Amino acid sequence: MMQYIEPIFRPPSEAKSLILQVTNGCSYNKCSFCEMYVSPQKKFKPKAIAEIEKEVKAVAAQIPDMTRFFLADGDAMTLSFRRLKEILECINKHFPNRERVTAYCLPRNIKKKTVEELAELKELGLTMVYVGCESGDDKVLECIQKGETFETSKAALVKLKSAGIKSSVMILNGLGGRKFSEQHAVNTARLINETQPEFVSTLVVSFPTGEERFRAGFNGDYEPLQQSGLFSEIRTFIENLELTNTVFRSDHASNYLVLKGTLGADKQSMLEKIDLALNKPGSIPLRQEWERGL
Ligand SMILES: C[S@@+](CC[C@H](N)C(=O)[O-])C[C@H]1O[C@@H](n2cnc3c(N)ncnc32)[C@H](O)[C@@H]1O
Ligand code: SF4
Image 1 (cartoon, rainbow, N blue to C red):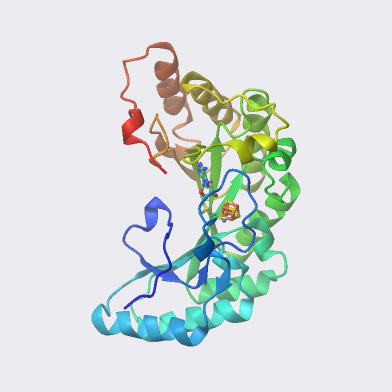
Image 2 (cartoon, helix red, strand yellow):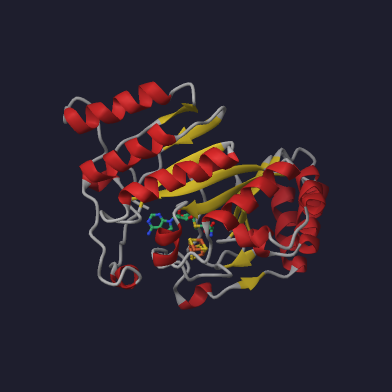
């Protein structure tokens, strides 16, 4: 029914969604920590709209009451406003019970789209995007070759909010190593405070196939954080957050310590949980190495 080019990635919260692969790969594909779309069969290419419609129709014939949809791969929001509109209209035509459509989104993906266009996409069902900000610190962003800065990330998050599209921001714990840990935590909190996204999640950076490419961006000056360093960094990050209503999660499989709650309300209890993990090891359950994964 679906012609997937593997591997396919989706956020944990999209487990019940139909994954529509509207592009193959990532249009940027240069972040030094990311190995998701590096294999030869994952070269970036948008899928033709006729093919997308064929797949949508085929699924609708089998599961007509599907409500949630995730547009893959790595940055489906790179597609033009016109193409995204066509895709959403196609979903709406074949799935009358559609509740929400989401996608990964790089800040630069929405630079050329106006607030009005984004608001139109929202009306057509695009209620939320997952934005891989990773850090709010310009030095760390440069080292990891994200191609974004504090200001470009902020501009994107502000624009999405003006259009009524929710943001789920992904932050990478341990991304700056020991040297940049403090500024990574503080400036990322500043980015989140100035944009007040609806969701924030943290993942622990890891390198299943080696970290040479990543290290090169730091000129050899990268010392990975051990577990306590990762917890201290998250503590500094949360301590510096001043949020009114943001759902915070560190429940992705890559995390050792699972935190879930709404900030600001749960700030104190989250800090207490981190302090327990830091100061009384064994008093709080942590994920074991073998339970973690990307
Ligand atoms: C498939 S990517 C898509 C996000 C989108 N392309 C962007 O950058 O905004 C999803 C997220 O996975 C996370 N990720 C990628 N490589 C990782 C790694 N080596 N370790 C931990 N998390 C990683 C990053 O937070 C990234 O934003
Ligand atoms: S993190 Fe996102 S933008 Fe960067 S290479 Fe991976 S998929 Fe592409």
